[in-house]
Amino acid sequence: MTHIRVPISKLTSGRRVLAAAALTAVTALALTACGTEQNDGGGKAGSAGSPTASQLSQPERAAAQALFDRFEKACPEPGVNSRRPTGTAKPDTEEPETIAPGETPPADPIEPAPPTGPEAELDDRDWCVSAHHEQRVIAALQMLADPTPAKVRKTLNGLGYTDERIHHLKQDGKKTRFYIDLREDGGGRLCESGVAAGAVSDVVPCVAVAEGPFKVTSEVRP
Image (cartoon, rainbow, N blue to C red; front, side):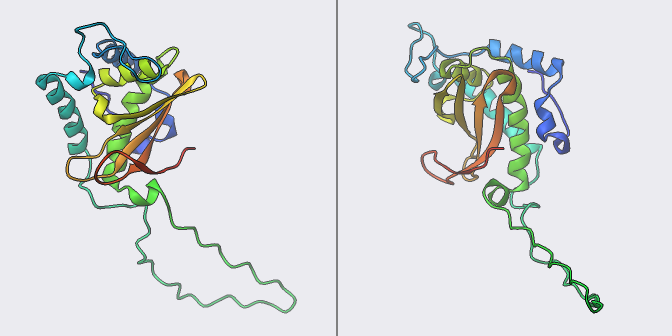
């Protein structure tokens, strides 16, 4: 498997314009996808005897988990959220400016609103892990013609995301929307909200419930 290393600081909106080499590498991954074809409603429609993602062998599951572990090891420890205000800013001790007679006093500065949604709820580790997953998923989806739910599922399976991690595949016009559960075993709330739409495919972080069946609690789409 070829791994594409990009500094996390650069994995903003610009990461969606990927180099041809990266696209070629991910195409190779997608072409090795295992699992049966499924109809747009999510029902199984593969040939008899072909394994689904839920029937992956132990080595295949281990390989998929190794991918997750590698991304997590490359990122900071959980618990730090540099996007959330700490409330420890130094108070303003400067003397207020005097206003000459007849002058209009300046408007009070507008305090920035505290972050909400994923910005507030996900820590630096989540954002780092998310960036790694987004890069590879977007690259694969950008090359997927006619992104039906069945094709999107097969592509995600080929990248190592088992059916247990893929949720709410839904056709939306010519696009397919989906979620990927990236919660770590024993904790974490990270998930990905994706739109498969060819060259304009997009994947952004979202927040899921910490425990139990997968359910999205917060997401913000640009």
